[in-house]
Length: 387
Ligand code: GLY
Image 1 (tube, helix red, strand yellow):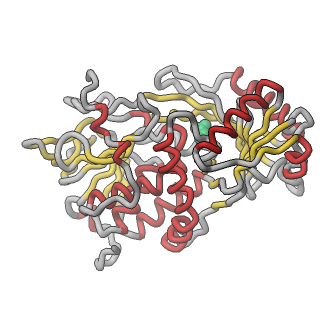
Image 2 (tube, rainbow, N blue to C red; image 1 turned 90 degrees about the vertical axis):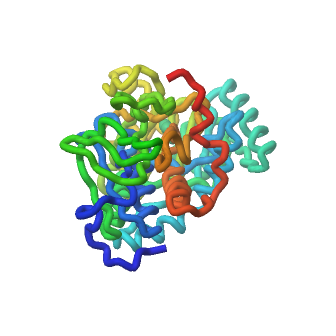
Image 3 (cartoon, helix red, strand yellow; image 1 turned 135 degrees about the vertical axis):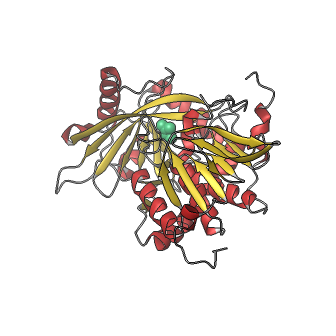
């Protein structure tokens, strides 16, 4: 429900109803949805944000293609998020007065040798069991759909409903729409929570405390790490992903229309001419350098999959830190002292899950039932972990 107040920066002048710590896509979506529900929201994030996952992400909205054994709850939530995405983009485009570049392009997962073809078949059977069958294609059918594919692609699975979005453009629209709804954005380091009689009273920030009866942590791979006096069990660890950005030269055709996935990489070609190749996966703490080996491997594998990649212009190599929990599922809901909300641990699915997570958390904030089942993502499941 929209507030009847005009969207001035009311949260600047008075204590906000909600402080969101973190301005990645999850934090921005939570802030936007909470503002739509009528809350005065202030978003606080550290300056710089080196290593943040959102600006590096490829923006694959691929719940089925990314589905993994034992993560059925995540698949269910992801499919719901994907189903709602287009309507969310329509609403956000109107609120931001700027088109959100969402494209339901489909995805094709291809095998490049016999072992990969066997793995693809195992995956196909898994999808069938889940009731979300993906048609199997032979090599020539793959190339009919994506003529740029190399002839070593001998089998494929087609995921027709999957989509892509530019995460940087999405973040910009969420920020603009939030500002129009009165959300205040502040660049400051948060060093801890204010807790009084087991209730949240705000956050300790530099240069001074900010008071509010509700705080939502959307701090990505950083969780509540390094906070003074924090005894919260929010076990999030960083998993580095290195990603390349290329550009289709003016006048040339994109190398593929759909998202193309292999066992080692994925390729997302946008209408804008940007082509994203991702991603590595490695755990070396908060280190965010891009290694020469990673660039070589990503380019080599992309070139093996679609040889035309060699004709594109090189734009950028970057690394982001995916926020991962011990069971690979997000943490969504209440945690610790009263008034504390958590939207953390979206791991490989932050872009896909941000809007639905935002709606669920905004519902909890205003005392409504979340629009999707989130019991499996209760942060309390880690409450007994050693801190
Ligand atoms: N969702 C793709 C990735 O995390 O690399």
